[in-house]
Image (tube, rainbow, N blue to C red; front, side, top):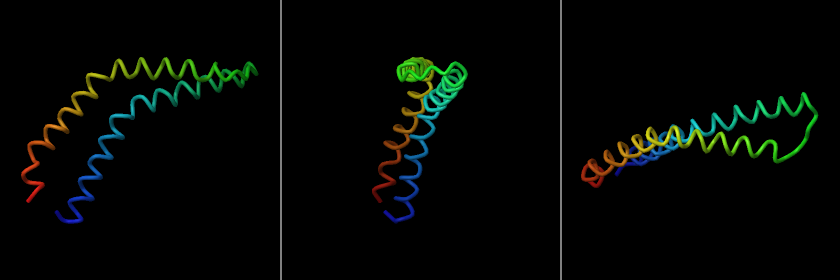
Length: 89
C-alpha cells in the first residue's frame, strides 16, 4: 500500500459520505432559511419553530432518499469487497 493509495481510498470514502449526506443537509438548510425568513418577517423568535420543521423535513428527505442511499452504499461496499485482494497486494 502506497501513500497515494491510502489518500485516494480516504478521499473516495469522504466523497461517498458527502454525496450520501447532501440531500438531507440541503433540505435542512433550505427549510432553515425559509423558517428564518418567516421569523424575521413576523418577529417570532421561538426556538422550537426552527427545529421542528427542520427535523420533519430531514426525516421526510431521508425516507425519500433512502433507496438511493442504500444503492450507493451497496455499490461502494460491493466494490470495496471485490477489490479487497487488489488492495492487500
